[in-house]
Image 1 (tube, helix red, strand yellow):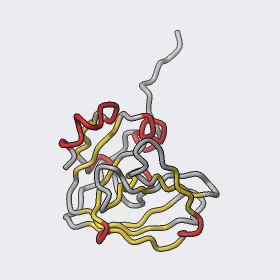
Image 2 (cartoon, rainbow, N blue to C red):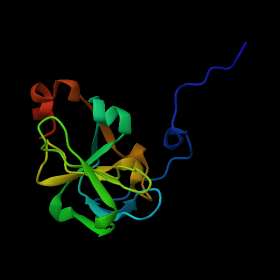
Image 3 (cartoon, rainbow, N blue to C red):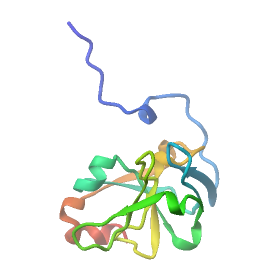
Length: 145
């Protein structure tokens, strides 16, 4: 009989708990190849997990920050942008490695959604992750604002 493990991705593997630091928390992150780097300040430990076609494929954990709490440190020329449907969201990704480290979401066009999986020095377990029904975006967006 084969051992069946629950579906896990590397960042979900259980490990010793790291204490959650006080807010605000300023962090850095970026893409896999290092061409894109950013700094973001989190003022809440709220996050969302969207089930829309784009977010599901990216496996993004959304950490929303206002634009004044986000700085692109390097890589503007290394980014490409994909838009679809209403053309409001700007899905930025690294042209070299393809990582979606952050983007401008339709729900918060005056801010950024930082991909929690692209941030260094944090534990996703620090965040309260709420499911967002992106497949029914118009009926659900009020839960994000």
